[in-house]
Structures are given as structure tokens and as C-alpha cells.
Length: 241
Image (cartoon, rainbow, N blue to C red; front, side):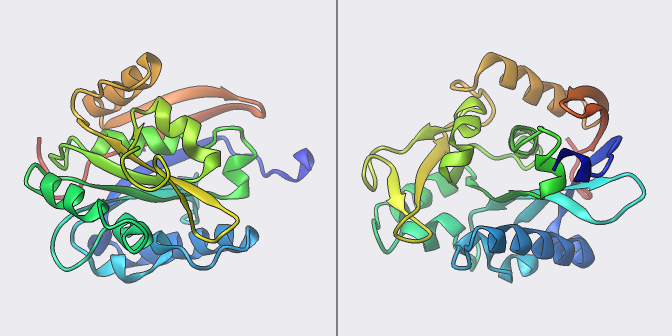
């Protein structure tokens, strides 16, 4: 299988407000849907497509050089307006204690990190979800957020904890839910303060702060398939710090 992995020398991480780029939204949805289909998952709230009309949704999209194909992505959805957070739709009918939690946090600006996915091309490089997760957390400062929710699968749990999330053990079965179907579990998580990042592992906190201080940045990393240049442009149109 290793020989079938396409050679990628450069990756581009960009932050975009969803309503500002409809074509990027469509490519994001196509890529996310393909990944979910591989695992036989069709009923998942973060895969609904009504978010493309939500002015409170921001995307991280990952592309390779000279290509507009989105190879990985993630979203931040700020709570408010007529769109519930995906976590509310996903687990609210199981445990309605999630609703007052989010309502209480809205005043300080909260939201959810959701819809994270990697295509097989990215997964094959050994980069995994950690770069995507830390990038999503990094842009919360631009969005003037206080807290950040997530509903994560077992495969991404470890990286979520590294980037500063903690289990919300007062809901569900100590934070765990059978979702999106009975033979799968997901864990409800929160970063209580995305600015101080008190629970974030030191190396991840340093990486997130580096991105926040350098929204336009290039890094060279070693992967199991060689060196890759990662170009970050996390400047969100219309937002100035």
C-alpha cells in the first residue's frame, strides 16, 4: 500500500468563513462524505450540509500544491442564531443537560470543533488529526471565543486530550455516548478556556501559540514518507486582531 500513496511535498492549511467560499464548502462536504462512507457511517450530525448557510461557521481546509482538492478539513461553529451545534443534535435527545451548558457558555462565546476528517492521502503521511486539531483550536482566538466543545470518536480522543480538551463527565455515561450508532461510542469534551489552554500538553500549547502569533507561516516537518512543507494561512477574511 505504501507505493500507492501519492507523493506530496507541500500541504496548505487555510482558514475560511464558510459563507465566503461556496465551492470550498462543496469540496469539503464531498471529501468528508467519502471518508464516512468508508466506515459505513451515514447518520452523523456534523455531516449535515446546512452549515454552509451558517454565518457562524469557519473551516480549516487542507490542500496539496497546485490542487484545489480538499484532502482534510475541520470546522468551528460558534453557538448562536437558528443553528444548533452538532453536539446538541447528536446527544441532546439522550441527555438534555447539554443544552443549559451551552446556553450558559453562549454569553462568553462558545462553539464546537466538529466535522474533522482526513483523506487516505493525508492519513498515509502519518500526520493524522493532530495538525488539524491544533489549527482549529488556534483560530478560536481570532473568533474571540472563550470555550470550545467537541464530540470525538475513540480514534481522535488522544489527540483531543493533547490539544486541551477534557471529558464532560457530568453527562452521558461519564461523558460517553453510543453515537453515531449503537456499536460506536463518542466522548463529549470541552476546552474551558481556549485562551489560557490550561489543560493542553506543553508541546501542543507551544504549537498552537506559534500558529496564533504567526497566522501566515511555513514549517517543514519529517513524516514517515519524507519531508513535507506545511504552509499555514489562518488569516480569516474580515477579521482583524
